[in-house]
Length: 440
Ligand code: HGY
Ligand code: MN
Ligand code: MN
Image (cartoon, rainbow, N blue to C red):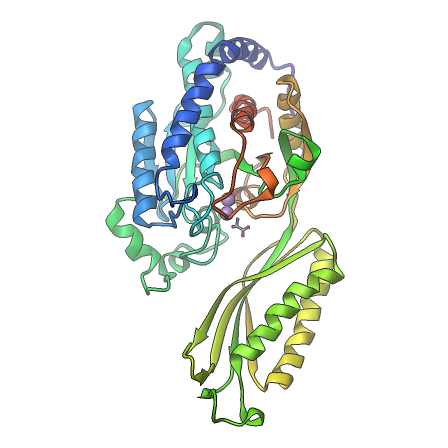
Protein backbone atom coordinates (compact mmCIF):
# COMPACT_ATOMS: atom_id res chain seq x y z
CA UNK A 1 0.00 0.00 0.00
CA UNK A 2 1.05 3.62 -0.33
CA UNK A 3 3.56 4.70 2.31
CA UNK A 4 2.34 8.28 2.37
CA UNK A 5 4.56 9.21 5.22
CA UNK A 6 7.73 8.01 3.56
CA UNK A 7 10.18 10.80 4.49
CA UNK A 8 12.07 10.75 1.24
CA UNK A 9 8.79 10.94 -0.65
CA UNK A 10 7.59 13.85 1.42
CA UNK A 11 10.88 15.70 0.95
CA UNK A 12 11.06 15.00 -2.73
CA UNK A 13 7.42 15.81 -3.27
CA UNK A 14 7.64 19.16 -1.53
CA UNK A 15 10.84 20.09 -3.37
CA UNK A 16 9.59 18.63 -6.61
CA UNK A 17 6.18 20.26 -6.37
CA UNK A 18 7.91 23.59 -5.75
CA UNK A 19 10.06 22.83 -8.73
CA UNK A 20 6.99 21.72 -10.66
CA UNK A 21 4.91 24.75 -9.84
CA UNK A 22 7.67 27.13 -10.91
CA UNK A 23 8.85 25.00 -13.80
CA UNK A 24 5.42 23.66 -14.71
CA UNK A 25 4.92 26.40 -17.28
CA UNK A 26 8.19 25.52 -18.98
CA UNK A 27 7.65 21.78 -18.52
CA UNK A 28 4.15 22.03 -19.95
CA UNK A 29 5.29 24.15 -22.88
CA UNK A 30 8.12 21.75 -23.61
CA UNK A 31 5.72 18.81 -23.59
CA UNK A 32 3.20 20.53 -25.88
CA UNK A 33 5.96 21.51 -28.33
CA UNK A 34 7.15 17.91 -28.54
CA UNK A 35 3.57 16.68 -28.87
CA UNK A 36 3.04 19.07 -31.76
CA UNK A 37 6.16 17.66 -33.45
CA UNK A 38 4.88 14.11 -32.97
CA UNK A 39 1.63 15.02 -34.72
CA UNK A 40 3.65 15.59 -37.89
CA UNK A 41 4.72 11.96 -38.26
CA UNK A 42 2.33 10.24 -40.67
CA UNK A 43 0.11 13.35 -40.62
CA UNK A 44 -3.00 13.07 -42.80
CA UNK A 45 -4.68 16.05 -44.41
CA UNK A 46 -7.42 16.21 -41.78
CA UNK A 47 -5.62 16.57 -38.47
CA UNK A 48 -5.04 12.86 -37.96
CA UNK A 49 -2.22 10.39 -38.52
CA UNK A 50 -1.55 7.15 -40.35
CA UNK A 51 1.52 5.49 -38.80
CA UNK A 52 0.78 1.81 -38.61
CA UNK A 53 3.27 -0.56 -36.98
CA UNK A 54 6.64 -0.69 -38.77
CA UNK A 55 5.45 1.65 -41.52
CA UNK A 56 7.89 4.36 -42.67
CA UNK A 57 5.97 6.93 -40.62
CA UNK A 58 6.22 4.70 -37.54
CA UNK A 59 9.92 4.13 -38.14
CA UNK A 60 10.46 7.86 -38.58
CA UNK A 61 8.74 8.77 -35.31
CA UNK A 62 10.68 6.05 -33.49
CA UNK A 63 13.97 7.48 -34.75
CA UNK A 64 12.88 10.95 -33.58
CA UNK A 65 11.87 9.58 -30.20
CA UNK A 66 15.22 7.80 -29.80
CA UNK A 67 16.92 11.13 -30.42
CA UNK A 68 14.72 12.88 -27.87
CA UNK A 69 15.52 10.28 -25.21
CA UNK A 70 19.24 10.14 -25.95
CA UNK A 71 19.35 13.92 -25.95
CA UNK A 72 18.31 13.76 -22.28
CA UNK A 73 20.95 11.18 -21.45
CA UNK A 74 18.68 8.12 -21.54
CA UNK A 75 19.97 4.85 -22.97
CA UNK A 76 17.72 3.54 -25.75
CA UNK A 77 17.37 -0.16 -26.44
CA UNK A 78 15.01 -2.45 -28.37
CA UNK A 79 13.85 -5.90 -27.36
CA UNK A 80 13.28 -8.96 -29.55
CA UNK A 81 9.80 -7.85 -30.75
CA UNK A 82 10.78 -4.24 -31.41
CA UNK A 83 9.57 -2.65 -28.18
CA UNK A 84 11.48 0.64 -27.72
CA UNK A 85 12.84 1.50 -24.24
CA UNK A 86 14.46 4.69 -22.90
CA UNK A 87 16.37 3.78 -19.72
CA UNK A 88 17.08 6.12 -16.78
CA UNK A 89 19.29 4.48 -14.17
CA UNK A 90 18.75 5.78 -10.62
CA UNK A 91 19.72 2.64 -8.70
CA UNK A 92 22.35 0.53 -10.49
CA UNK A 93 21.17 -3.03 -11.05
CA UNK A 94 17.62 -2.44 -9.81
CA UNK A 95 14.53 -3.41 -11.83
CA UNK A 96 12.50 -0.80 -13.65
CA UNK A 97 9.28 1.10 -13.38
CA UNK A 98 7.97 0.83 -16.94
CA UNK A 99 6.01 3.92 -18.03
CA UNK A 100 4.66 4.39 -21.54
CA UNK A 101 2.14 3.37 -24.18
CA UNK A 102 2.29 2.99 -28.00
CA UNK A 103 3.06 5.30 -30.93
CA UNK A 104 1.64 3.18 -33.74
CA UNK A 105 -1.82 4.17 -34.99
CA UNK A 106 -4.82 2.85 -36.83
CA UNK A 107 -5.15 3.93 -40.49
CA UNK A 108 -6.30 7.61 -40.77
CA UNK A 109 -6.70 7.85 -37.01
CA UNK A 110 -6.17 10.32 -34.19
CA UNK A 111 -2.82 11.64 -33.02
CA UNK A 112 -3.55 11.26 -29.29
CA UNK A 113 -4.25 7.51 -28.99
CA UNK A 114 -1.11 5.96 -27.50
CA UNK A 115 1.29 8.68 -28.61
CA UNK A 116 0.16 10.97 -25.79
CA UNK A 117 1.01 8.31 -23.22
CA UNK A 118 4.45 7.65 -24.65
CA UNK A 119 5.43 11.32 -24.68
CA UNK A 120 3.89 11.98 -21.26
CA UNK A 121 5.97 9.09 -19.92
CA UNK A 122 9.11 10.57 -21.45
CA UNK A 123 8.47 14.02 -19.99
CA UNK A 124 7.60 12.56 -16.58
CA UNK A 125 10.90 10.69 -16.69
CA UNK A 126 12.72 13.87 -17.76
CA UNK A 127 11.38 15.63 -14.65
CA UNK A 128 12.42 12.70 -12.46
CA UNK A 129 15.90 12.80 -14.02
CA UNK A 130 16.18 16.56 -13.44
CA UNK A 131 15.04 16.20 -9.83
CA UNK A 132 17.45 13.34 -9.24
CA UNK A 133 20.40 15.23 -10.69
CA UNK A 134 19.44 18.55 -9.07
CA UNK A 135 20.99 17.38 -5.79
CA UNK A 136 20.00 18.90 -2.43
CA UNK A 137 16.58 17.98 -0.98
CA UNK A 138 15.27 16.88 -4.31
CA UNK A 139 18.14 14.45 -4.60
CA UNK A 140 15.74 12.47 -2.44
CA UNK A 141 14.41 11.20 -5.70
CA UNK A 142 17.66 9.36 -6.36
CA UNK A 143 18.37 8.68 -2.66
CA UNK A 144 14.80 7.49 -2.00
CA UNK A 145 14.59 5.54 -5.21
CA UNK A 146 14.45 1.76 -5.14
CA UNK A 147 13.84 1.33 -8.86
CA UNK A 148 14.99 2.70 -12.19
CA UNK A 149 12.73 4.17 -14.87
CA UNK A 150 12.15 2.79 -18.37
CA UNK A 151 10.08 4.81 -20.83
CA UNK A 152 8.45 2.36 -23.25
CA UNK A 153 6.94 2.63 -26.73
CA UNK A 154 5.26 -0.75 -27.18
CA UNK A 155 5.41 -2.26 -30.68
CA UNK A 156 2.13 -2.72 -32.60
CA UNK A 157 -0.46 -2.01 -29.93
CA UNK A 158 -3.12 -1.29 -32.54
CA UNK A 159 -3.07 -4.59 -34.37
CA UNK A 160 -4.29 -3.01 -37.63
CA UNK A 161 -1.46 -4.06 -39.98
CA UNK A 162 -0.40 -7.10 -37.92
CA UNK A 163 -3.08 -8.94 -35.89
CA UNK A 164 -3.43 -9.25 -32.89
CA UNK A 165 -3.37 -5.91 -31.14
CA UNK A 166 -1.19 -5.28 -28.06
CA UNK A 167 1.46 -7.47 -29.74
CA UNK A 168 4.63 -5.96 -28.23
CA UNK A 169 3.40 -6.06 -24.64
CA UNK A 170 1.87 -9.52 -25.22
CA UNK A 171 5.30 -10.89 -26.17
CA UNK A 172 6.98 -8.99 -23.29
CA UNK A 173 4.53 -10.46 -20.74
CA UNK A 174 4.60 -13.98 -22.28
CA UNK A 175 0.96 -13.90 -23.43
CA UNK A 176 2.06 -14.34 -27.07
CA UNK A 177 5.04 -16.53 -28.10
CA UNK A 178 7.79 -14.51 -29.82
CA UNK A 179 8.00 -16.77 -32.85
CA UNK A 180 4.24 -16.57 -33.41
CA UNK A 181 4.39 -12.77 -33.34
CA UNK A 182 7.40 -12.53 -35.67
CA UNK A 183 5.66 -14.82 -38.15
CA UNK A 184 2.43 -12.77 -38.43
CA UNK A 185 1.98 -11.42 -41.97
CA UNK A 186 0.21 -8.31 -43.17
CA UNK A 187 -2.14 -8.25 -46.18
CA UNK A 188 0.85 -7.81 -48.50
CA UNK A 189 2.38 -11.00 -47.08
CA UNK A 190 5.18 -9.19 -45.20
CA UNK A 191 5.96 -10.73 -41.80
CA UNK A 192 6.60 -8.75 -38.60
CA UNK A 193 10.20 -9.96 -38.69
CA UNK A 194 10.68 -8.92 -42.33
CA UNK A 195 9.16 -5.51 -41.57
CA UNK A 196 11.29 -4.94 -38.47
CA UNK A 197 14.62 -6.49 -39.58
CA UNK A 198 15.80 -3.59 -41.83
CA UNK A 199 14.75 -0.88 -39.35
CA UNK A 200 17.33 -1.57 -36.66
CA UNK A 201 14.49 -1.82 -34.14
CA UNK A 202 14.69 -5.60 -33.79
CA UNK A 203 16.74 -6.30 -30.64
CA UNK A 204 17.94 -9.54 -29.10
CA UNK A 205 16.91 -9.38 -25.46
CA UNK A 206 13.67 -9.53 -23.50
CA UNK A 207 13.82 -5.86 -22.43
CA UNK A 208 14.35 -4.36 -18.95
CA UNK A 209 13.01 -6.27 -15.93
CA UNK A 210 9.79 -4.62 -14.73
CA UNK A 211 8.92 -4.12 -11.07
CA UNK A 212 5.96 -1.77 -11.60
CA UNK A 213 4.16 -0.11 -14.50
CA UNK A 214 2.13 3.00 -15.28
CA UNK A 215 0.31 4.11 -18.43
CA UNK A 216 -1.68 7.22 -19.24
CA UNK A 217 -4.04 7.26 -22.23
CA UNK A 218 -6.99 9.19 -23.67
CA UNK A 219 -10.32 7.70 -22.53
CA UNK A 220 -11.66 7.14 -26.07
CA UNK A 221 -15.15 7.45 -24.59
CA UNK A 222 -17.03 10.42 -23.18
CA UNK A 223 -17.68 9.53 -19.52
CA UNK A 224 -14.99 11.90 -18.16
CA UNK A 225 -16.11 14.72 -20.43
CA UNK A 226 -19.79 14.22 -19.54
CA UNK A 227 -18.89 14.30 -15.83
CA UNK A 228 -16.49 17.26 -16.15
CA UNK A 229 -13.74 15.12 -14.60
CA UNK A 230 -10.09 15.62 -15.55
CA UNK A 231 -8.40 12.39 -14.43
CA UNK A 232 -9.71 8.84 -14.85
CA UNK A 233 -8.49 6.28 -12.31
CA UNK A 234 -8.83 3.08 -14.30
CA UNK A 235 -10.03 0.16 -12.16
CA UNK A 236 -10.46 -2.61 -14.78
CA UNK A 237 -10.77 -3.37 -18.50
CA UNK A 238 -14.01 -4.49 -20.16
CA UNK A 239 -13.69 -8.12 -21.21
CA UNK A 240 -13.08 -8.76 -24.92
CA UNK A 241 -13.66 -11.59 -27.39
CA UNK A 242 -12.22 -11.03 -30.87
CA UNK A 243 -12.96 -13.62 -33.56
CA UNK A 244 -11.67 -14.38 -37.03
CA UNK A 245 -14.72 -15.71 -38.91
CA UNK A 246 -14.59 -17.37 -42.34
CA UNK A 247 -17.89 -17.82 -44.23
CA UNK A 248 -17.58 -20.35 -47.09
CA UNK A 249 -19.99 -20.73 -49.99
CA UNK A 250 -19.52 -21.32 -53.72
CA UNK A 251 -18.72 -19.02 -56.62
CA UNK A 252 -21.56 -18.60 -59.07
CA UNK A 253 -22.74 -16.25 -61.79
CA UNK A 254 -24.39 -13.24 -60.12
CA UNK A 255 -26.99 -13.17 -62.88
CA UNK A 256 -27.47 -16.56 -64.43
CA UNK A 257 -27.34 -18.84 -61.40
CA UNK A 258 -30.85 -19.46 -60.04
CA UNK A 259 -31.35 -18.20 -56.49
CA UNK A 260 -32.07 -21.58 -54.88
CA UNK A 261 -28.75 -22.92 -56.17
CA UNK A 262 -26.67 -20.19 -54.56
CA UNK A 263 -24.30 -20.56 -51.60
CA UNK A 264 -23.64 -16.86 -51.18
CA UNK A 265 -20.83 -16.26 -48.63
CA UNK A 266 -21.36 -12.49 -48.64
CA UNK A 267 -25.07 -12.92 -47.88
CA UNK A 268 -24.17 -15.17 -44.95
CA UNK A 269 -21.53 -12.74 -43.72
CA UNK A 270 -23.97 -9.82 -44.01
CA UNK A 271 -26.56 -11.64 -41.89
CA UNK A 272 -23.83 -12.12 -39.28
CA UNK A 273 -22.73 -8.47 -39.33
CA UNK A 274 -26.32 -7.28 -38.78
CA UNK A 275 -26.91 -9.85 -36.03
CA UNK A 276 -23.73 -8.86 -34.17
CA UNK A 277 -24.72 -5.21 -34.23
CA UNK A 278 -28.34 -5.84 -33.16
CA UNK A 279 -27.20 -8.20 -30.39
CA UNK A 280 -26.13 -5.08 -28.44
CA UNK A 281 -29.80 -4.03 -28.21
CA UNK A 282 -30.33 -6.99 -25.86
CA UNK A 283 -27.56 -5.74 -23.52
CA UNK A 284 -27.92 -1.95 -23.69
CA UNK A 285 -24.85 -0.10 -22.43
CA UNK A 286 -23.17 -3.38 -21.45
CA UNK A 287 -22.14 -4.91 -24.80
CA UNK A 288 -20.30 -3.31 -27.70
CA UNK A 289 -19.79 -5.19 -30.99
CA UNK A 290 -18.33 -4.37 -34.40
CA UNK A 291 -17.06 -5.97 -37.57
CA UNK A 292 -14.30 -3.60 -38.71
CA UNK A 293 -12.61 -5.71 -41.33
CA UNK A 294 -14.23 -7.80 -44.04
CA UNK A 295 -12.52 -9.39 -47.06
CA UNK A 296 -14.57 -10.80 -49.94
CA UNK A 297 -13.33 -13.41 -52.44
CA UNK A 298 -13.27 -13.10 -55.43
CA UNK A 299 -14.78 -9.65 -54.89
CA UNK A 300 -15.89 -9.42 -58.49
CA UNK A 301 -19.06 -7.61 -59.61
CA UNK A 302 -20.49 -10.52 -61.56
CA UNK A 303 -19.61 -13.35 -59.16
CA UNK A 304 -21.43 -14.64 -56.09
CA UNK A 305 -18.77 -14.58 -53.33
CA UNK A 306 -17.39 -17.97 -52.33
CA UNK A 307 -15.50 -16.84 -49.22
CA UNK A 308 -15.71 -13.94 -46.78
CA UNK A 309 -13.27 -13.41 -43.90
CA UNK A 310 -14.30 -10.98 -41.20
CA UNK A 311 -12.95 -9.90 -37.81
CA UNK A 312 -15.68 -9.67 -35.16
CA UNK A 313 -15.04 -7.71 -31.95
CA UNK A 314 -17.17 -8.05 -28.76
CA UNK A 315 -16.58 -6.05 -25.55
CA UNK A 316 -18.59 -6.37 -22.33
CA UNK A 317 -18.33 -5.07 -18.76
CA UNK A 318 -19.62 -8.39 -17.40
CA UNK A 319 -18.01 -11.75 -18.18
CA UNK A 320 -21.25 -13.72 -17.65
CA UNK A 321 -23.11 -11.48 -20.12
CA UNK A 322 -20.27 -11.86 -22.62
CA UNK A 323 -20.59 -15.65 -22.35
CA UNK A 324 -24.35 -15.26 -22.95
CA UNK A 325 -23.71 -13.09 -26.03
CA UNK A 326 -21.22 -15.63 -27.36
CA UNK A 327 -23.78 -18.43 -26.91
CA UNK A 328 -26.37 -16.41 -28.83
CA UNK A 329 -23.78 -15.91 -31.59
CA UNK A 330 -23.19 -19.66 -31.80
CA UNK A 331 -26.91 -20.29 -32.19
CA UNK A 332 -27.17 -17.63 -34.90
CA UNK A 333 -24.20 -19.11 -36.78
CA UNK A 334 -26.13 -22.38 -37.16
CA UNK A 335 -29.22 -20.50 -38.40
CA UNK A 336 -27.20 -18.53 -40.94
CA UNK A 337 -25.49 -21.68 -42.25
CA UNK A 338 -28.92 -23.16 -42.97
CA UNK A 339 -30.47 -19.96 -44.32
CA UNK A 340 -27.60 -19.01 -46.70
CA UNK A 341 -26.45 -22.61 -47.33
CA UNK A 342 -22.89 -21.75 -46.27
CA UNK A 343 -20.36 -23.01 -43.74
CA UNK A 344 -19.03 -20.77 -40.96
CA UNK A 345 -15.70 -21.28 -39.18
CA UNK A 346 -14.97 -19.12 -36.09
CA UNK A 347 -11.57 -18.82 -34.36
CA UNK A 348 -11.02 -16.83 -31.16
CA UNK A 349 -8.02 -14.70 -32.18
CA UNK A 350 -7.66 -12.53 -29.06
CA UNK A 351 -9.46 -12.21 -25.75
CA UNK A 352 -9.04 -10.90 -22.22
CA UNK A 353 -11.06 -10.96 -19.03
CA UNK A 354 -12.03 -8.08 -16.80
CA UNK A 355 -9.19 -8.69 -14.30
CA UNK A 356 -8.91 -5.45 -12.29
CA UNK A 357 -5.90 -3.16 -11.88
CA UNK A 358 -4.39 -3.27 -8.39
CA UNK A 359 -6.68 -1.22 -6.08
CA UNK A 360 -3.63 0.16 -4.22
CA UNK A 361 -2.53 1.70 -7.51
CA UNK A 362 -5.92 3.35 -7.96
CA UNK A 363 -5.63 4.77 -4.43
CA UNK A 364 -2.11 6.00 -5.14
CA UNK A 365 -3.20 7.78 -8.31
CA UNK A 366 -6.17 9.29 -6.52
CA UNK A 367 -3.93 10.71 -3.78
CA UNK A 368 -1.67 12.31 -6.40
CA UNK A 369 -4.60 13.83 -8.30
CA UNK A 370 -6.06 15.14 -5.02
CA UNK A 371 -2.71 16.72 -4.05
CA UNK A 372 -2.70 18.47 -7.41
CA UNK A 373 -6.28 19.61 -6.92
CA UNK A 374 -7.47 17.77 -10.03
CA UNK A 375 -10.96 16.29 -10.29
CA UNK A 376 -10.77 12.54 -10.59
CA UNK A 377 -12.97 9.46 -10.54
CA UNK A 378 -12.82 5.72 -11.00
CA UNK A 379 -13.59 4.41 -14.48
CA UNK A 380 -13.36 1.16 -16.47
CA UNK A 381 -11.57 1.12 -19.78
CA UNK A 382 -13.54 -0.33 -22.71
CA UNK A 383 -10.49 -0.41 -24.97
CA UNK A 384 -7.60 -2.73 -24.33
CA UNK A 385 -4.18 -1.24 -23.68
CA UNK A 386 -0.66 -2.51 -23.10
CA UNK A 387 -1.35 -2.05 -19.39
CA UNK A 388 -4.10 -4.70 -19.84
CA UNK A 389 -1.19 -7.11 -20.25
CA UNK A 390 1.22 -5.48 -17.80
CA UNK A 391 -1.19 -5.52 -14.82
CA UNK A 392 -1.06 -9.35 -15.02
CA UNK A 393 2.73 -9.23 -14.60
CA UNK A 394 3.39 -6.39 -12.11
CA UNK A 395 1.33 -3.84 -10.12
CA UNK A 396 0.15 -1.32 -12.71
CA UNK A 397 -1.43 2.13 -12.57
CA UNK A 398 -3.65 3.15 -15.50
CA UNK A 399 -4.76 6.75 -15.95
CA UNK A 400 -7.12 8.52 -18.36
CA UNK A 401 -7.60 12.05 -19.61
CA UNK A 402 -10.81 13.09 -21.37
CA UNK A 403 -11.56 12.62 -25.08
CA UNK A 404 -13.68 15.41 -26.56
CA UNK A 405 -17.03 13.87 -27.66
CA UNK A 406 -15.51 10.42 -27.05
CA UNK A 407 -14.09 10.43 -30.56
CA UNK A 408 -11.20 8.01 -31.23
CA UNK A 409 -9.71 5.91 -34.03
CA UNK A 410 -10.82 8.91 -36.06
CA UNK A 411 -8.92 11.94 -37.38
CA UNK A 412 -11.20 14.12 -35.25
CA UNK A 413 -9.78 12.68 -32.01
CA UNK A 414 -9.00 15.55 -29.61
CA UNK A 415 -8.00 16.24 -26.01
CA UNK A 416 -7.64 19.74 -24.56
CA UNK A 417 -4.01 20.83 -23.94
CA UNK A 418 -4.89 21.64 -20.31
CA UNK A 419 -6.01 18.04 -19.80
CA UNK A 420 -2.89 16.71 -21.50
CA UNK A 421 -0.57 18.55 -19.10
CA UNK A 422 -2.77 17.80 -16.08
CA UNK A 423 -2.37 14.11 -16.93
CA UNK A 424 1.38 14.61 -17.29
CA UNK A 425 1.53 16.13 -13.79
CA UNK A 426 -0.42 13.21 -12.29
CA UNK A 427 1.72 10.64 -14.09
CA UNK A 428 4.86 12.39 -12.83
CA UNK A 429 3.55 12.31 -9.26
CA UNK A 430 2.62 8.64 -9.58
CA UNK A 431 6.07 7.76 -10.92
CA UNK A 432 7.73 9.57 -7.98
CA UNK A 433 5.88 7.14 -5.71
CA UNK A 434 6.50 4.07 -7.86
CA UNK A 435 10.28 4.50 -8.05
CA UNK A 436 10.29 4.50 -4.25
CA UNK A 437 8.37 1.26 -4.14
CA UNK A 438 5.33 2.95 -2.60
CA UNK A 439 3.14 0.45 -4.41
CA UNK A 440 3.59 -3.25 -3.86
O1 HGY B 1 -8.94 -2.23 -27.62
C1 HGY B 1 -8.18 -2.75 -28.43
O2 HGY B 1 -8.37 -3.84 -28.89
C2 HGY B 1 -6.96 -1.99 -28.88
O3 HGY B 1 -5.88 -2.84 -28.77
N1 HGY B 1 -6.74 -0.79 -28.12
MN1 MN C 1 -4.31 3.02 -27.61
MN1 MN D 1 -6.18 2.49 -30.49
